[in-house]
Length: 233
Image (cartoon, rainbow, N blue to C red; front, side):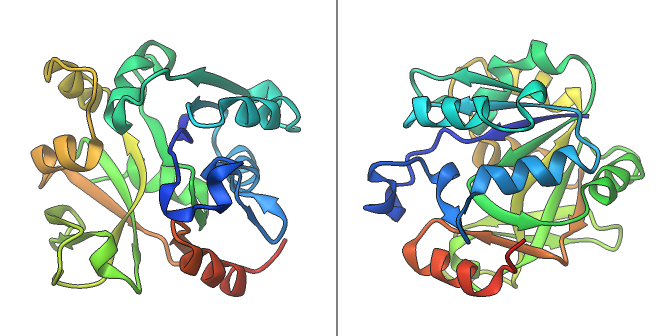
């Protein structure tokens, strides 16, 4: 399976840390976030990955070039940010007509990748994507999901004041070509998966519950929590 690692964001909430480095290279226990993702993905079911770049692209390119996984990696530069769905669309030929993984690589996560892939392959009939979900301690800052008995996402509440629960979208997906076709049909370059795609596919999004670890390290406070919680390896 191939993967798209979204690593182009500005990381504005982490300033001044991200004044000089991109969020995807922010260290946890001395290791950049991308290092954790590369090791986890490439040792457990992902064959190749494409990393999109924009902010401090030269730093990301240098990190990829120096990675022990560099032979499995490619980077693609976005002069203007395209949104998560827009990046998928721009690189659709690279993925071909097979299912692939989409990863917000500026989050810190640990889960058995092969189980996530297996969950997608065994998803309920008609599901066009599988979303990794987790239990959050900050539901107001996340996209909260409501599931049916099959684990299909029926309702999605993106960063609302009083969300109905703590089960959240982990922003890691496995998507079928049908999702890419839908994005193409929107007829525009900038597309966001959370606001433009997920609402359309409610009832057809399977879920995989990450019981290992997951945290958006988008603020200094959450980064500190990650440093305290995440076991160094």
